[in-house]
Length: 289
Image (cartoon, rainbow, N blue to C red; front, side, top):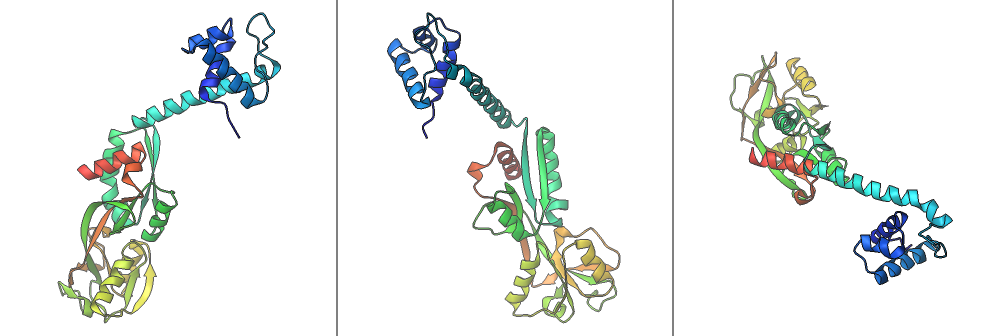
């Protein structure tokens, strides 16, 4: 379907307050010939006349009067679009949706980043959704979030490194391995393993696979507090990223692991060159931090 052009609609509005068709066009810098051509093209597109050419002055037809408020709405909408875009570009208003894969990002990496961002751009509403690493990837692809905090590498996305932390063993305080630091991965594999079912699960599996070890997983838990409590009660040992851990937890000890295994955490997006103004501002803030 053909639609009227903005120039044609602009001419139509100019007709309302003009004493002639040519003078309406002149207000827009149009020649009489161009004005006549644009008006005929508008009426041809609409399939009806909008100006009564038999009247002594400019007078809209019934159809012209009926569409007039809608044409005014079009330009009101355009002004609103421009104002909204301008405000967004200046970061006065807007919304930013972020995905966070777990405790490491939600409690350690994101708070200082978002605190500085809110101080600089108080009008931007920031929504954080905490899910697993794989779910954050899917949310990025499906545009549910614009930026995700994920484990790296993620070659399918544009990424920005936020930090690196080591995988550590969490062991009951009275356990036979509690006195070892570092503790060998082969020794950990001899005991029931409480598997983290959040951001570090894939890394833990990779650690054991690289060492050619098959761990004996007895529990799969997602919340770090639940994991720590299970370990404290002697249900097994676990391996988690150091950034996910509180400074201390009663009944457990943290120990380094040999061989050492590190995790890289960063921001991810579909295309950093196509981020919204708010997302681009957060991305650049993280880059310069």
